[in-house]
Length: 607
View (tube, rainbow, N blue to C red):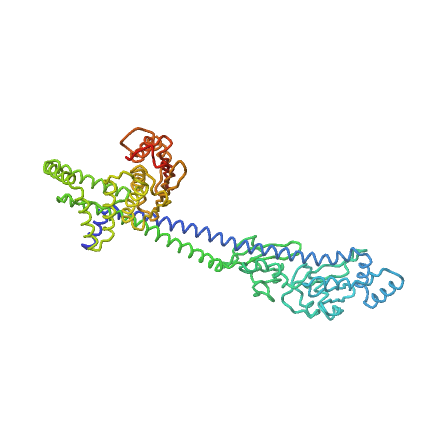
């Protein structure tokens, strides 16, 4: 109980934890809501897509069967267009076959048209032209005879006398244009394949318009798969083709062949779309000229499986987003809380009297600025204490130190050397190198040389850069390129080093690891052209314009003092054509061109 109260109190008093919990709650609710609405939208889109694919396939099947119906009709239309051929077929259906053969021979011997006796050949050719036709039958009403044509089989003539066969009754009663093959016609044609549908068309005499028989075409429903080949890979559910009485003309699932469709009453009662049952979506297309129905069944379980896959993917992505959206801000908040607690801890140290406490935070954000302001406040407080309580002692000590430094300047070099050797003996070789470079740099500044050369100035730059290369280790590199023949040219002292210092102070990016500085020296008569180029912070266009104006001013203090000093001294010593030029782009680096005299500055003197 005590731990629970302690946790609640900690949470109530911890601002960062409350912000984190609030942000986490908002993030979780937002991502869950977005994921849910996306799931609903994408699931419905997936269902509509599957239904559209099925409906497209159904349309193709509907068009295909319509074409087959028209194909069966076109057989008789082609017959009627040839009067001689139509007359021969009419004679055949209204007279015994022997009389038809005898009459055909008479017509041929009398020089009649050669197509008069080609009726059966015409139908045989149309049968061979369509691979989906299994049987083509011609029924004579007057003679009660059934002519059966099949692929690769001779024509059969079957007597269909009403006393011995039900075929005349079937042909008289069955007036549906597209239906299942009648069992008596199947028996006559010896055709028991379940994957068939028939198209019946009445045959009339062209002259008297009297009905003299019927044409019956048995088509294979397997040909429908050809029109489904493009959608077959993506097609789901079942496509049925039903006759008006419930006969199954085609079944993509192969479940209902050979038996009537059990839900025909519901299909006839429904509109284009409906739920035939609780388990299926149903789509219906009707074909008036063929009197058949195309029905599409889409199981809801199959669509639910697709929706489940979509949902699992969406919610998995949502879970990952929640983890990332909470983890990253949590790390940031915990880091800010840690830095805030550090500031609080140091303020308590100062409160307890420790005026040496300093917060080590070099970042540029608000907490970094607070830390620096805190350190500056402590520094000013210490300075105030020093001024009030230690002013006189400190003044005397400073005067004594300055006097000793003036009396023996070599004391500094010797002391630095002792420190360097001590650092090396303790294994701190990088400290030793820094002290050595600093000592050499001090010597170059203090010592007086009559002939100060380009080599001396580049060496001073090198020593200065070595200090910072050791300081930044792998974050900073530099290069100095100079023709050795130019090394002995006399130059003005401190003509390049302030530029290097300016880069270190303003241009170097301490957080980056690719800081580079390049010094190149070229002879371009009458100039000795020195180019100092870096990839540092660069200078904004406004600031670059201000620097250009400062270079032309006569100020001896203030901003850009080093650059102004070099520029003014070069112009005073050697003329207005010498000086420096600054080129820069913010975030890309700075290039400073220094134009020195190539004739050793004979008109000038050492400074």
